[in-house]
Amino acid sequence: MTTNSQEALNLEGAMTAGGGTDDDIPLGERKTVTDFCYLLDKSKQLFNGLRDLPQYGQKQWQSYFGRTFDVYTKLWKFQQQHRQILDNRYGLKRWQIGEIASKIGQLYYHYYLRTSETSYLNEAFSFYSAIRQRAYYSQVTKEDRPELVVKKLRYYARYIVVCLLLNKMDLVGDLVKELSDEIEDYTHRFNTEDQLEWNLVLQEVAAFVEADPVIVLNDDNSIMVTSNRLAEGVVPPLEQGMVAGQLALADALIVGNCSSQVKFSELTIDMFRMLQALEREPINLASQLNKTGNQESTEKPSKRENPHKYLLYKPTFSQLYTFLSASFKELPGNSVLLVYLSATGVFPTGRCDYEGIVKECFQLLVRQELSPKHTLTGLQEGTVEGPYDFGGVLTNNNRDAGSMEVIQKRNNSFKEMHCLHPGDFFPFTRKPLFLIVDSSNSIAYKNFINLFGQPLVCLLSPTAYPKGLQDQTQRGSLFTLFLYNPLMAFLFMCRLTSMRKGLWDKCQEYLLKIYRDIAHLLTKSRTVDQAFLQFFGDDFLRLLLTRFILCSATMRLHKMFRETRNYPETYPQLQKEDSVENPALQNHILELASMLDVRSLFLEKTTAEY
View (cartoon, one colour):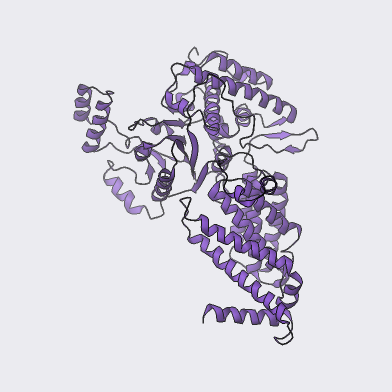
């Protein structure tokens, strides 16, 4: 049967269900129903086609998204203008209107994921909020159709994700309660097999909401919602005389592969925190439209406010490499690619083969980092280590690894196939690369070699934490928490679980002073590697670097952090006396500790003196 004949049957059935025969329906009203059915069918076709678009690349999908938006906009306006006719002649139900609104909300959310423009989150929220306020899905339970109830449950899950990203935590609590009631009613009425799956959704979102280790209380004891996106006044300014490069952060890959970590909707808590650290506070698209006066200036801003991001939850090696290659290919001139890895560590199993050792030695000889005598001795003894000898972080394995494990047991000289080694990044160091590794084997990425002379910096987490903090890793890494919300991380290190808003604001103000002083330390230093300064001109990277130095300096002063593996590291290495062990910075940290009445937890002397 052709599509046109199928549409005709659908239309005839809709009109009959709506009331009246063909002869009873005026020609104008019949045309209204026909146009509505056409727009509805076209919108479904376009929406279903979205899943076939490539997930990577920034150009192939834009025109298709534009067409889909246009059709849904027409469909939404059309049903508003002709609601009475559609109610009477088509039998339009409120859940069907809700389904259209939900699809538009999904469009805006996916447009946010592809563009990283947080304004589109507000638009998604507007449509999801309208569905709830107007109770579009309220009559679904009367239909006695489980698939319609599942649509309602999925709507709630999507709405919760958007609210989490917009930090609307009070609303999240209300939505979780409503979702719980809906799931209970759904499983009671229908004997379904997905009850455990929906209960797992509830457990995941509850754990996600409770992941923050510190709560801030208002004067009335209500919980204050803190936003940690980049806001005006938070980034230390570039003052006259400061030396900083002109590179701009354009693309970011955010990778999460920690099996035990709290997650919701393919977002681990570390991924969630890092993506917000790489975004500015969202603005309302409608208000921006009013200021600019036209839609085009909103959709094609002259300057992208946020770096474009890919969110990869438990990717395979090939998936990660594909997205990495796409970002590398489309990276504009004078731009930076940031890669954030939050993943389980993979430790070395064997040494490189002879050919790999020769290549590594040749590179070291060229850079005069290895003497010919050292090289010969290393080759004879097999002790020269290369970029695949230190392990790395784990990527996902979709296939049965049984045969691979048998091979590795026979020959430990093979490397782990599903490991992202430092050497895997070498081809991408042809352009400026900023790498953040949060892993139990992050130290593997200290063994980089800058082959092409492009700016390259790696910020590396501690590989282990003191015993008192190890049991908290499920709620997210302390290292990433420092990059996302330094004050919350500082409080967590000091075992403080709550704080009054007044003191919180006072401490945040003091942190801004610390950031400014760290910026001065780096830009005035004569020993700092120029790679750090080349990234310092970008707001996001400047804030990450200052927070990293604060994190490292704090851990070196804290009495619980006494092992080398408890400290963050960098490539290239930072001179400690000009950064993480600078006496002025240490005094700032002690002053912050005094404000919180926890100074006794910190050393009064530098780490070196200790």
